[in-house]
Image (cartoon, rainbow, N blue to C red; front, side):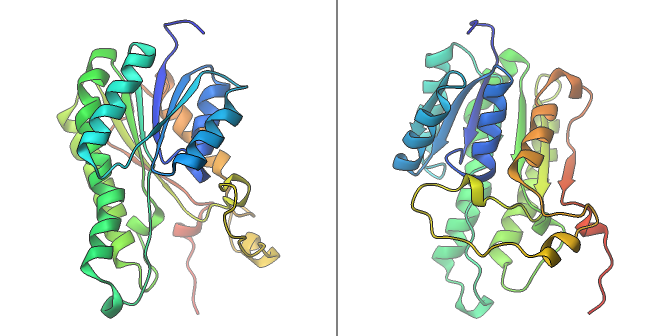
Length: 252
């Protein structure tokens, strides 16, 4: 692998959408650093993906600023530079509003929003030097909600707003965009030992105008484009990947 190969730092890359993004970058001949709070899952997926290309795992809790600073610096030490930051780490805690504790609210906002801020803060000097890019992974919950999703929806709405703020603050050296996935079936990208999820039904697929539920590779394909020179005139934008569901009128 050439030292000129681009380097991507992917938070929450041990499973789900983050894992698919990491794998797509490796397939595109990038170097990848997976940062995740789950050490066992991160080490396992890094070992599995090593057959595709250069990948490292760094145990990182994105709500801990010191860990974030050390992880970003570690990625630069390993590969010499940093070109792409993917803020994908996320958690949810969906309970009735009157049962949502302040601690749980703060944890969701901390991982989903503050973590993205901390990663951007410490990656920014390196990304400015390389003319790099940031892609934040939000959710269609930033645009519409189900009941009992206050913390998650607020965190993802904040992440969309953080995206256009960063795009202005880091311009023109760094482009910053956001991807908001809808229903994505991550069952094939879950960590070892994760509890099973209910099988999808024909109705689950048919209700989407695109005719199916999404898969992590759908998100990864858009992220790969946004992180590439082909998207050099795109910044500050939010892209919805939901098979058309947020545009579909539904009457109960």
